[in-house]
Length: 65
Image (cartoon, rainbow, N blue to C red; front, side, top):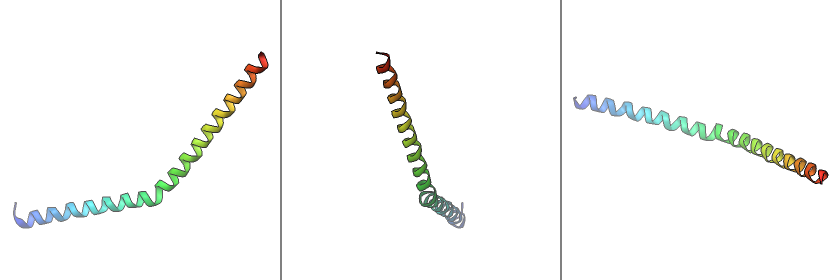
């Protein structure tokens, strides 16, 4: 390969890396915040559901005794 071909290849690699960095930055700033909020909602739903089921089961067990 000639020096010109190496330089061209290096520029292509640099451009690709720049696009990847920009995409990752966009994902970090725009999408992760929303995903984090959705995960928090799901975790709170699971926590309250587990507490409700445990409370109902405890009520049934103590009522039977």
